[in-house]
Length: 258
Image (cartoon, rainbow, N blue to C red; front, side, top):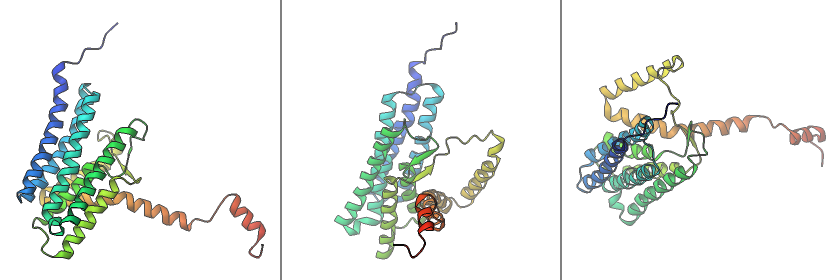
């Protein structure tokens, strides 16, 4: 009877290196934002999201998943997708508002930590096809892509307020109950996924032609998909005629029944 080959001890270091790289990007982002290097800080958040997307997959591919690796990944995400985008948003646009700006930035950190804690608790019992609430890398990506696209800090107060509103919305979406597509079941080798190949090719072409606004369009569109789907569903339910015992009783009693 064949026995499973033991996983080499060094294999466990591979996903951990991606996680530490993710953490390093978050740390460097805070330093860069505090020094006014906003474009570089935004790029570091995007790089952290890429590293975060690969560490779990590499761990599963190599059979080196562990409880410690999962906890390390969550702690790194709090820094890279909670603290780092908050620091970037504060130094880029919210600092003139002083205490109010600091509280708004802290709100994002709290929401990111709560989102990650909820994910850890519910990950074993939730549908893998969906995320409950906007994933923290996507919320951080919204902040990073806005800064990367606009570059210069808002010169007008109304522009800073508008950014602050978008920043708060991204924070609250993380702790919402809205469902976001996870795309974990997407298999590009499947014939049924041929349409996704065309979509990815179009996105790649757009990013190569105009990376700044393309990244913002992707991040913003994904963040708005769940609220848009909820709104459409709410409108459809509102227009649908009532059914069931209540509707039947109303039909029987008639409009003049008391």
